[in-house]
Image (cartoon, rainbow, N blue to C red; front, side, top):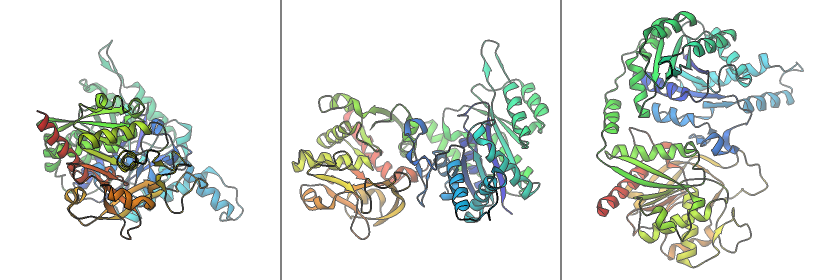
Length: 537
């Protein structure tokens, strides 16, 4: 029978519930168990697809095209399992489905209520992810903070799941803050006690309490007090101290015997996790043999989580090459052709990530131009590919007005335009080209050298694409169309083949990068940047 683990959070948001859930997933996977993970988000948006990256962070995309919370990226990177549309549920999705069923008359004229109709929808979603993946263990993170009014239906639903699946088949983990008061030199357990009391008042008794703290808890009486007041076994109170390296978290939690305790409480018989490869990876991260400097040029730089997966993919590639990466987060609105050398000259490579909207576009175009003219390694992702095409069309082909239809709907040379079946009249949410699609790689190109394959599959999230009307002229001017869809209709990747590394891809390779399995495109980009750095010296 599938086992269910629920991870909740208390006191404050941003405690790292997602990292705790992802780390536990890695530990259980390394015990030989099949693990699935999901996130329940209390916000009323249907999905994060139309939300501002500055407020919410990046939108993560699954293989089957679901637009999801960024925590799913943590799950995939740690657990190395592809998630799906059943991996992220929002209040908006729940109510949308319930109301649709009511309109179709599926409730037989009954009064629609939070209990049972909304909670039943949530439970159905929780059960489905296990069925669809045939998982031994499903780890479900409940977003928000215990006590939030928005979270109450989700807490009630997971309470019901625990009752329905029975003893030893459901486990509740509560991640909570233990603040450290420097004035008195002591940790305080009272916020945790109040948070657990709030959770218990909603019918959920945590089995394990994870204590988030910036300072190591030296006083064992704190742990004993929390165990006594919160009605858990002393060894089920586990410390989670802030770490310098994200990927140390599974090792720290394993030292605290988290997976042993989880298996004991759920009556799972499984061997101890083999963390040898993970330890070796962390050791490489701790002892880099040098640093490579990358300028990331975008418009959401005030919140680095807006580009979380790209940042992690750069780090993964550097780890694989025994290096660390220093990222300069450059606001594209501050760059122009007059200062681009000053702004980007110190970088060993330039990356322009994905995005939407006109703001900051000219700065991104300037960054692509600087990379092309100086032969500095360049990687353009989604919008980053589109601005590279625009720049090339303007300054090499000679179309000074070249642009995207998105930014200038009335332009003469829209070298980037709507995809088929896309236009301004359709809804913005859930209507992009989403999920994994195949791509044919042209032999002898930089792209081919990176992948070492004739056909690849990558995840997409876009509405605009390379305009086929200008294929021949742009290709004849020297831009290689190095990746196309199997039917040849869509340009998926472009490059300047004569340069050490200048590649733009319409897809999002960052979503498939893992800390112990760097994405080949990012690895090729970082290798080229390192080579450039060595020649500078």
